[in-house]
Image (tube, rainbow, N blue to C red; front, side, top):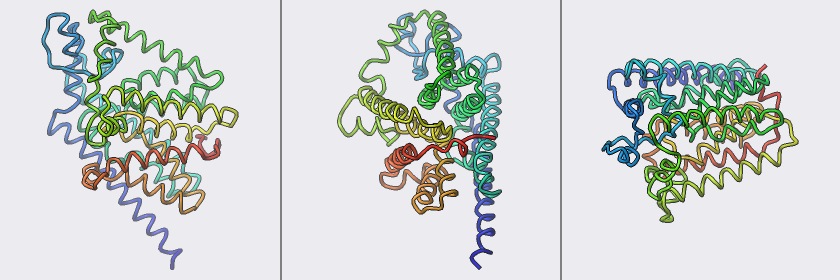
Length: 382
């Protein structure tokens, strides 16, 4: 009887997950059109200032004698990157381009998930295909017009290009994904292997060039920009609401948000660098590397739930281990990861310390996955 029930239960579970995925994505897509507003319009406003030659920050604009309210947290090189989204069609163009590229990215992520898990059977392949798209924060990303899904689509392309030894195109994909550095920065790690470094160098060169263009166009110097963003209160937006480990640390210890973020980033970078150094002689497991980078990004930087797509490599790896190793620990971690990402954030936040528990889970998963022996063949796409 048990054997008969299992296929039925798997089919039911996958059907429910598929329905949840469709509801999540449709909700976000429709909200963007029926209730326009949110982050995309902030980016459009910032691009408008930039296009007119004003850097979108009150202190920097004041140096030109202008009073503005726009406070862009995006780095200088991102300003020229906004052009393909908003020029010349404005909000309509931005909504269409962001949604189209976001859905394309989710399709690619689903294809990768299916390929990575299909070796365990058809049901596992379907689970892999749905795992990333079912993340509840995707709805908010689409509704807000966020770049999160696009960034992870580019990171996925980077992953595929590196597997084919296409280092320079991979570096360019990484650079374009750096439009949201709090997601992308840790994914520079795979370039720190023999013969891959030039891809990272090319990506950094592109970012420096775009930054130079932004500074030249707005008349802002790099020193002006650094002076604004090195003020103790410059990162106060990370405080409150368990949105980041740095924000929680600042609230708990009374540190400035900037100092707390610097501390957390430094600790995260040190830990990941030591891990990478210790395993430098071991074969590369692309999925494991991506999973560790994802956990480092999630814990080390400020995010809202629309960035949760960044954790899809960690989710895929826990699912892979749960399916292939059949051990209670991996099943527990896989279920916990899935619930932390597929459950709507508003429900998680209603649980006392729910947001903090999410961060601790992602940290734990990142550490446990980092300690696993690499499985290059399991993490490759054939």
